Amino acid sequence: MDSLSTTFAALADPTRRAILGRLAAGDATVGELAQPFTISAPAVSRHLRVLEQAGLISRQVDAQWRLCSLQALPLRDAHDWLDGYRNFWEVSLDRLVDLVEHDGRPAAADTTRARRSMQTRTTTNPPRSRRRSSNK
Image (cartoon, rainbow, N blue to C red; front, side, top):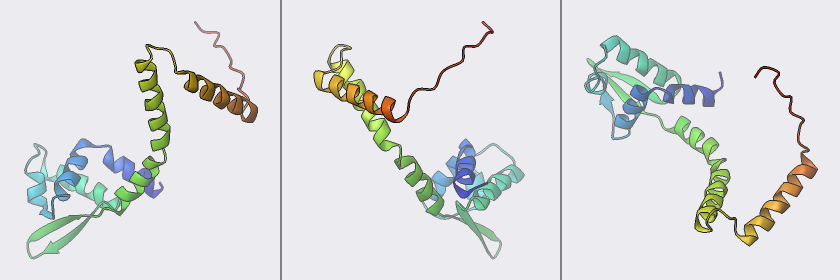
């Protein structure tokens, strides 16, 4: 699995996200990280192992304490990947605002822009034919 997929897989669990949120405030021992959860110590250890394998945390042994630290580089990579979709969402939300502000009718400039965009799309990427399902 590539590192971005590993990062997102680790972030998929709310307990692991909460652990990362706590570590964003500073280093913590395993016991401190486990305290707010009603899960067993082995379950917390498994979550920490997943986060460590994803490169999201590091663990050090200091005398009898196991100290965990946030490692933010994989989060930066995930942010950069998601940021590539920012323009899409901003344009989509701008169009929604325009529709709401114009009582469900696109503004004249938007209609022209949408028409040009559609012409470009159909010239560069002709639509694929869709098969209709025979099961209804």
